[in-house]
Length: 309
Image (cartoon, rainbow, N blue to C red; front, side, top):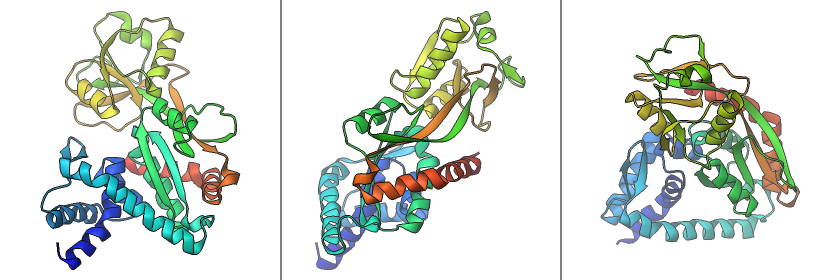
């Protein structure tokens, strides 16, 4: 590889690392503050320079190819080394040059997480985020184990040595097929859904915060939970509903295809989304992010959700 080509590869590695971390070009573009087509072209250019693609489409997201998986640890190491070099010159404790480890529930990565990062980096463009996503339990496990300094989850628990900030309350609705008997109704109750035994319930797997809330709602109503399918993400759950395979209790969404939302008639039909921050006083960058979340987090998150809807 010629020197010029090698320098081009190096310039593209930070984009590749972020895409690999978040698993979606759209989310990565929001985090990087770049247009989505620019990110896609960067990935294509990197593959062309290396002589083999580094990512490939996987449903709504992307996955690394064998070449991408081989490259990723070296790319991360290289980016981290450059950051350490910058810190050595500018001072590792400076707010504008630190790193925030953030673990979050996957669905929050569609709008809320990119919006928070983008707004924070408007003020501190040099701050880097190390992202990890998955179930609520995974995010909390990352936080408890010290693998991240910030966790964005539903129903944030009390954690010793950590602060907690509520961002917003998100209503839960029943996702039904447009031909379902409840479609078009003002609201529907758990009891009515279970009354005739016609509907299988589509839920997320154990460990996801939404699964726990659904179990609480059914237990409170005194209705047995009749699970038809377990999904690993909300998109799959909606897809199963769209195929007429059951109904699902999900965060509020706009009608999409054959799937429509109906209000759930239950006092606990909502979930609280909040941010946990561990020991912010020990890291000026994390402390600055906590201050930003307390001051502006709710406004930023709700604005992002309204744009998505």
